[in-house]
Structure formats: C-alpha cells, structure tokens
Amino acid sequence: MSAVLISPVELREALPDKRVRLLDVRWALGDPDGPQHYLDGHIPGAVFVDMETELAAPPSPARGRHPLPDIAQLQRCARSWGIRNGDPVVVYDATGGMAAARAWWLLRWAGIADVRILDGGLPGWTNSGDELATGTEPDPEPGDVELSPGHLKVIDADAAARWRGVLLDARAGERYRGEIEPIDPRAGHIPGAISAPTAENLDANGRFRAPAELRDRFAGFTAEPVAVYCGSGVTAAHQVAALAVVGIEAALYPGSWSQWSNDPKRPVATGS
Figure 1 (cartoon, one colour):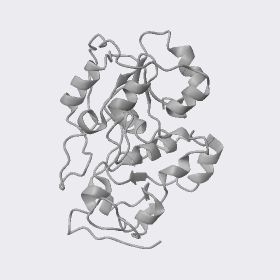
Figure 2: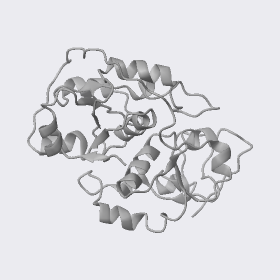
Figure 3: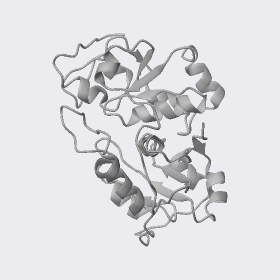
Figure 4: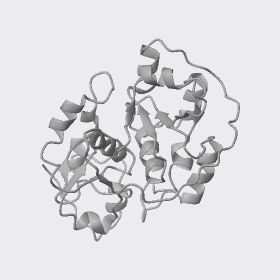
C-alpha cells in the first residue's frame, strides 16, 4: 500500500522534482471561496482544484450531493492539472485534509499509485516557515495520465444496507444520533452503523494522529471488512485515509447519507 501522508519537510525536499504535481483542494461546506483563498496564498506551484465541478458529478437526490465524477471527465481534469503517467501527486487544503482526502481517494481509485495528503495542510506548511505564493500560476503543461476506475473499494446503497462487516459513520456524533441535520432531508444514521467522527482522526494541530493512536482508535476492525460513509462521500475519504495509515483497506460509500436519506424506502436509526 502506498504511503498516505507527506510532511511539510518531506514536501519541501520533494518539490525540486518537477514531476511532483501539487493540488490545492481548499473547500468546506458553506465556504464557496476556495478560488479566492488560493489567490490570497497557496504553496508555490500548486494548481487549484474545484471540489464541486472537478471532483464530483452534479448533485441529485438519487446520487447524493457529491457523486463520483465520470472517469473521462476526471481524466480531462487531471490532464489539465498537468498530471502525467507516473507522476507523484500531493494534495492539500486548510482543514486537516478533510477536502484533500477526497482528491487523494479519487485519484487512487482512478489508478494513480502515488498520491499523498500534506499532513497539517496549508497551516502546517506555513507553521514550518515555508512561504506562500499569491495570485495565479502559469497554466501547467497538459498531462497525459490515463485513468481507469475501480482501484479502491466502493459500495452502493444496497451493499451498505446488507453490509456484514463494520460500517462507520464519519459524520459528527450529533448528526449520527439524529439530534440535528443541517442539510439532508432526514436525521439519523444507517441502521447498524457505528459512529466514528472524522474529526477524531486529527490532533490539536490539525495533523493526523500518530499511527499508534489511530491503531487504538480502530482496534477491533481488522478482522472484518470495513466500509465508511459520511454526508456526501467527502469526509468519509478522510476516514478511509486514516484507516489506510494503519493498514486497513476500507470501502467508501460515495452516495453516503445525502443519497440514503433521500430514498424513503431506506430505514433510518437514531440515538446511540
């Protein structure tokens, strides 16, 4: 299994290799200003990647808020980012990898072997004393990467309904319990799912917890198949990444709660 994370120091040492492709994936629910954040300051050489239009297909009740994009469209985007066959890719954001993990997962799923999440993201980079660039970057030379789907495990709603292993709900605990639901039509969780909020993968500095801590967090999941969902298949990718750090290969349910809760035939559980 390829390494999942790269530290700011390791990235600084790798950047002289012009084959390293650096993607800025800043996005957060309720914050549409990722492009402006990029212009205000980004790691030199990074290309901005738009979550809504480049890392997802258009939303629909039937497929969820961030469906997987068509592989041909994803390949066109990846080539526009300058990715060539065999290039290593580093992805980052400013929210502990919550958005960048979607790019990590999607590119790994599409067959790019070496994709890393910058541990600590943009704050980790600046806290290490590294500088930012502002404004736009020259358009990268178009890449020639060839993508194909299916290199990481995926499940759909039917598979989630009959899952016989561990099904993790990566949303905040109050959403899992059904106490609040800020965006999707029904509150609660998929029956049988276990609450495992993605935020608990991180330490106080926004970095992934040490492997030993993550191993303790996911203790007991190694003997059974693991699948993960969240609200729309974005932060669940962070959970898949954290599990991968400790050698657990988990499946992702891309439609997640935004798809499940829109189907009145699907049961909903509440409480702990």
